[in-house]
Image (tube, rainbow, N blue to C red; front, top):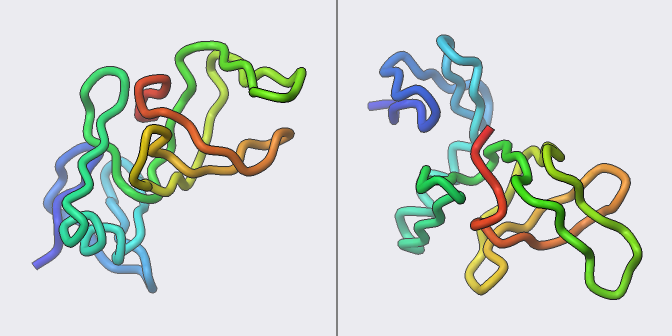
Length: 111
């Protein structure tokens, strides 16, 4: 049985290689993300309380100064293919123009 789409709750998801795909909203997420999240019991929610999953895309909701640098992650910056981790900064990602970094889920919203 296929899991429902985490974005739109559609029941019509299907497998495409190592990804699940929703034909209704075009959301894609890794197959192993569902199993890993269930095993770890890791529950991460965005600034609005929406459950985040591995491989989701998020948008930054607040300007974030990067410690030790003059760079700033601006409001509205889109971050794709996030990875959930344990800790205070619970999102591991790569941001275009900045590079790899970790974010707190309280400063993002699910795209």
